[in-house]
Image (cartoon, rainbow, N blue to C red):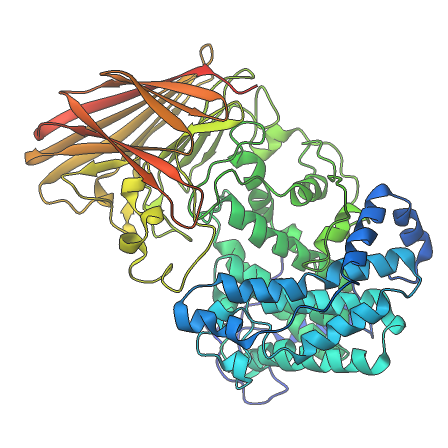
Length: 636
């Protein structure tokens, strides 16, 4: 099992009496044990440039030639300039793109240049690599402007580690490891000194004294895994002092437990698939770094819950290549293929996935993980094929006819045969990570499309995205722009108390019934109840029935939202059709009276979508509205 060393005191970052001691809750005995496991000198993962057998074999692949061509393009022209004005744009306007684009143009060059030099071994990329390193060392900050609101990083008064600086540190350290003495000795020394100043020392100080606060150590979302992977991975790769490496490794082992705790016990990621890709990729990188550095003595994959988290990717897939856009997850996101193939082998999931190939070799962007597509991964062997029923997936395909995340209240319904309808039905609550107010929402999948359902999150954040106006200023996060009811003109409220109560979860081979009490998600005077019941059938091409039962203490209005990235049309007074990527579903409405249809086109830092509102014309004391969806055609 995953060993986590707790002291008797609560989880905290209280000051220690001596700089040689660590703040609670890290255990000195565990740090000493890890110290013994670590090598005298730091080392990264995978073969260095000196291992010509490994790199020459890789250089023979067509993808290697394409990667070299990409690096050659960076030998032409001037290095993109650092721009203070671009960095400061966020502090002045609250907008992120300008500063982040400036930093990306500079930082994205290093990975292909290092790959190309390792592949060629001719020295012609070394001057460009050294120029890039000197440029990076002269930058006032590696932290993204949005994470440097007080500009303490920019002004050099206080270094706070963020997602970008941690991952960039790992890339820098890994580059030093791969190229070794091919790089100027003084430049290597200076690079390690700046890594110490900006990354390692601030975190070591937090562990020893509690200051400065690195708040992500106790976060239960992607920040925790991403920052730990970068800080710990870079230190194991390039930090000379073995005791300091051991302290950071122990902190990685201990504090990443907070990230694991952010998932339900059955592995559900409330942040959505996009953030599962991002956060769990870095958890896997952290695991690989610790496993390699300790010769397998420290393995984060040993805890049973981690296997449940690894299964989130295949379990949330509705149809082949089709995933729901829950929370801030971007629409049409897919599970990261390198991650999925790695997990398939590491846990013996039996999915039969292979590392994908493409025209270029994977980027080094975040250190070790993308090596796994071309070099053996540490701690992973060709695992025996395990029946995926053992992984909670059963029946007609490797992903089965359903996945039920009981602790999250999320049900994924799949068809019995290829070409049928799929659906995702969501309960949950409105205080989840990267939450949208979406309790009771649903998504339909058919062929390669999602004709109706959750439309996903923004492609760009601003300074106000996570502020008090999240659910009022931004259309993307409001419940009215999700397929859920609007009651007496009221939307859902945010907060943990706005939770669905599961009333029924009855699953059979030919149909699934899933019923939710949504009343707590609405603060509506006079609302007595609102329940939403789903019945998904697998007969023929399948169908989905959505039934809302509502009651008030005085006549009130009822409306329900339907959202699509595709097109829609009205067939007759009771029938609508929704089409996306050549897949069409027909919806028939059964209601206690006539209803009006209103349409709104919405575009907000993401691909545009359409909201179709169905509003009963007459206020009612109580009533039932039923929406029946059947597939007409799937995309080819």
